[in-house]
Amino acid sequence: MILSNTSIASALDAGLLVIDPRPPGPGSTDSAGRYNTTSIDLTLGEMLRIPARGLSLIIDPRAGDTAATLSTLYQPQPIDPVQGYRLDPGPDRLVLGATREYVALPRPPDVPDADPEQPALAARVEGKSTLARYGLLVHFTAPTIHANFAGTITLEIMNLGSAPITLYQDMPICQLIIEQVHGDPIQATSRFQGQTDPAGAI
Image 1 (cartoon, rainbow, N blue to C red):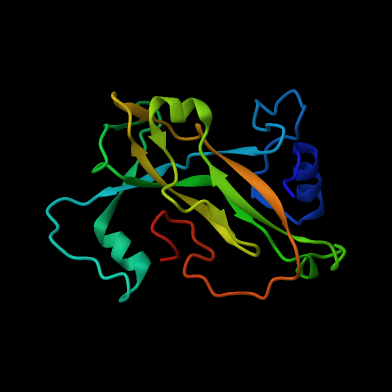
Image 2 (cartoon, rainbow, N blue to C red):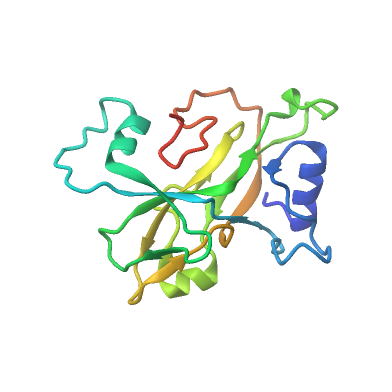
């Protein structure tokens, strides 16, 4: 079941969903359109990781530390607070970004004062229609945010349009859709748990 905007706000109040910094509630005068009827917008953080130049290597997904490999492949690139970052078109221009917001989906038994029998929450990240019409892709086959995840959300950003697109800090970049989980999930290990860098937990 997908949560409505009012149910998202209730989950934030109850601590079953954490978004830090927390946006104003739906319908408030300063919410700045962050809520749709069944989603909440997240914004782009202040750093990207862009492809490092001059590398010649073959990636073996079976071996090594993913975050370390990505840190080699993609170098940090702060987004200029005024001019932004120009993302040129092309499938070879993939950059990694992250939401400014830290998101957590704790299990109800781990939340003080929460009813341990109520469903846990999971989420998925999706693009925004306006940006998609310009050709901006913000996730590449990996929209799922699992129950009990905590961290910033990595975005795989690509410009598939016909013109350069400027990315800015704090621009609404994606939307988070929250869903209930049936059954109490057993914790699974994740190499991305606690991440605050687009490359993962380094």
